[in-house]
Length: 310
Length: 140
Image (cartoon, rainbow over all chains, first blue to last red; front, top):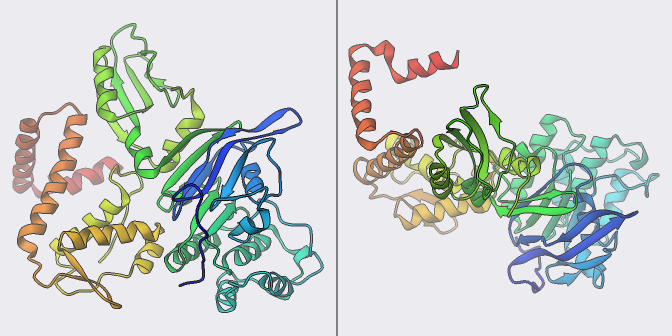
């Protein structure tokens, strides 16, 4: 497909970058010097609890919010100064549905949106509408949360933008439809070169689709790495320890350790190269009994659980 | 060819896909000149980034296991000899995984090899003690 036209990227090879991006709401930091790097062609999943700053990040990228300091770029275009140009590159599914256009029917709204994009693919829009069971004669104002979500997905995908910003795109959808959305998204990626930045509470759904992960906690990006690196460096260790053993301070403890009742066995999620972690543990007199690789969700959540340092 | 991925597996996804193709070749469910599923099909079925499937196919092509026919897709190489290279490659991959698992459990190579032979001999003597049966028992 030759629908997408990539403008020259600013930071080479990145679809989205933010530079010391900060935003406060009523004195509370929503984003704190965030340095997001989303490589072109990546499926980048942004993870974090409610209020961690995920939606704020999306809104700034869409120029719906202004940062207090720092900047954001989409394909090298400053989202503040070149907002409309940057937005034209994006298909956006917002976390909350728009309050505008409530009186319009879904079909009319799709026509309305289509007129804005030279790349709008009418046949594809129809195909998506069918695949997502969207009823075009329904009024936008009367849609359920799930229906509104499906409408937004059609609007975001049908113009085949080079960047998709999906803020909880499967929220409010039943499990079967969620599955269908993920299959549609995967086919979309095969047909159209696209970068995806996605936030979700259903991280397990992105287990195999995501190839990059960012973890936001209290407005800070506490981890940002590709899938293979995450899987290589975050592992769960079961160790046997001598009486009175204390954990060495240099470890990046990612999750709270759980200890057996007799305190001789310990289970830990640690960040670092497995061999060097095991060696360090051995030096303290601990014996590594088992090391397990974690799924994407558990590995990413480890960064939210404990005091990650270093 | 059936491909399944284990998201908790430590191997990167493209390597898992490569190993699944190799396994299908050794089992004979995929043979010389057979077409592989298209990148789009396999990506959508597995819900992985199509680039991951492309990467696996590219690597397999580099190793001479498959080749690309322009406009038609990816096919198993005609001269593919399933009883030599691929068996070796697959056995090597299985051995690597077993060795990693053994080391993690504090076992040495000799202990592992000895025990594999012993377990295999036990199973031969008494099929109900097969590894499959043991796994079933653990699950209950």
